[in-house]
Length: 439
Image (cartoon, rainbow, N blue to C red):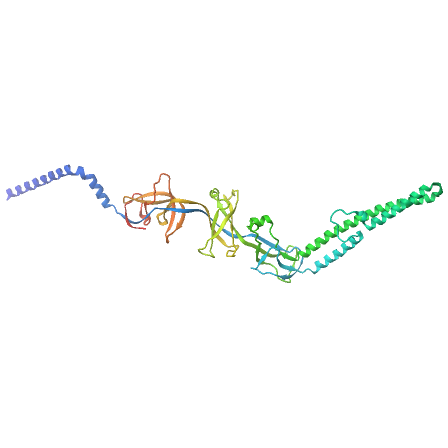
């Protein structure tokens, strides 16, 4: 038994040595040629693949626009105040009514003003009668034709002729007669000069009463409150004068009632020229090289969802506010149907150009962290991180929202590349991915 046990132990030791030799031979002859690839394959098999949705990068023709927000305002807004004092006699229009330029909106009691006008007309007629004319002269007046002056002139001529006759008589006339004739001639000459002065004073009185009459007539007209027509320059700026349209104002607010006493300066009615309207907005200075007068604008308001109103950039402020680093633009919006109202909040897009072949990706494919925006491009079963800058946004067809992207300097992206559109929180640069589907 002892002999058999010792023989079995030796045989088992021999088997271990043979097995070690065979294994070393195989390791030496086969592992150097297949070892690295086998190790790499084993590592990949051990790495977990992330199931993701892939979407293609699409080239689109997009419209480049600058977005603006602001409140709609009337092209012109006027607060009508009382120019004369008096009781409100009649209200011809209420809030919401449309009135044309020159149309009476309300009336102030005018009886006292009519009496003052009549009184001044009669006083003017008296002075005109003294001058011997019926209407105030337009320019300079020949005072020699005034009856008062003409009478004094005839008396002066008669006295001068009489004095000349007495002087020619010489010694036949007494000294008293000579002195009397000379004195009468001098008095007549002085009376003529005084007559001219009186005529000038009468003429000045006529002109003064004429001006006072015009003032009182103006006050009488001011008892009828109306909105004055725009000047030709303002009408042309509002798009009215060039096509011969009449301004149509809308009564936006009434501050008085019939029977109320209005004093000079009392606000009466606020009227707004609501066709066209204007949208004023502030834009950052970086957009100053894009916005120009005449560019098309699309405006949307909450009252009309899904509807776009066409406008035009009418003014661009040539300066930038140093405090806010913004500049103002004004957009003109035609409003013939009065669908838009002054005071509405509006959002607009100023069309500044068009881009052909812009690269776009689904909005879900973008990840932002610490101000850096990036996406992941699928290449050979792995995700390649790419930093991008966002541009224009849009949607369609369908509910899919897309965003224009511009790769950072040195980045590679082309139309047709597949980008990861789901599971971005689990993905890092170089991560293994498996396509679950594609949009």
